[in-house]
Amino acid sequence: MSFILAPSLLSANFLHLEKDIEMINASEADWLHLDVMDGVFVPNISIGFPLIKQVAKIASKPLDVHLMMVEPQKFISRFSDLGVQSLSVHYEACIHLHKTILQIKDAGMKAGVVLNPHTPVELLTDILEDVDIVLIMSVNPGFGGQKFIFHSYDKVRRLRAMIDQKDLNTQIEVDGGIDFENGKLMIETGVNILVAGNSIFNAPDPIEMIRRMKAEK
Ligand code: DX5
Ligand code: ZN
Image 1: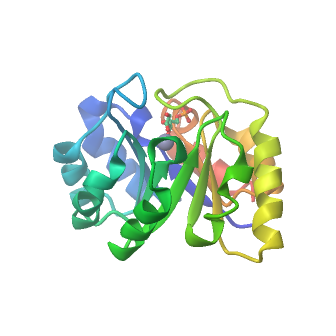
Image 2: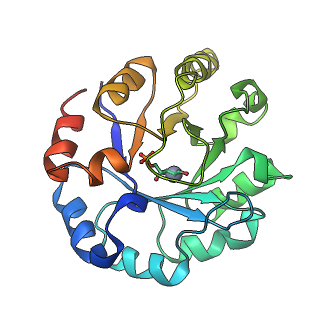
């Protein structure tokens, strides 16, 4: 089964960001995952537009942006202007989710909706056919390097059944605590896109870890 591997830049060395992005460029990774946090939706603040602009200049992999912020609809065009490929917003942060999803697609990006660990996949019944990606958080958002939540397998299984039953092409992405072992199981459970931060950037040889993870299909 082929899948997309998206290393999360949050775990990179920010003093040597250019070097880490060139490493990803040279690797077998498919996308580059960027985490934007506002300190309100999640108890942490990460990167903003000045940095993303520089990253976009040198990254050769498509940018997969995960917005952990309130009112993400205010910033959609800012991300499309930077050439972002996919933009995902949290279900829990969007009052008018359907409208926001359409705005993301109208801006020329893939539209994703993200679910926190406590949010049931069944809440997506009436939006599933409009989204390109559903991102299942397998940790509580806000920090890299956290412990994987085992219940995420069950959510992926239920979501895969919903997608297949409706005969949709919606992709399932999983983010948080993903490594070589649970990543393989997630693919077998029906995931299409794996995000991995700590397990790649803190591996002794990140390029080799990416190669190993990609070979696990
Ligand atoms: C967490 C972020 C993740 C994070 C994943 O809120 O959404 O993308 O960087 O990092 P790991 O793989 O270390 O859990
Ligand atoms: Zn993320």
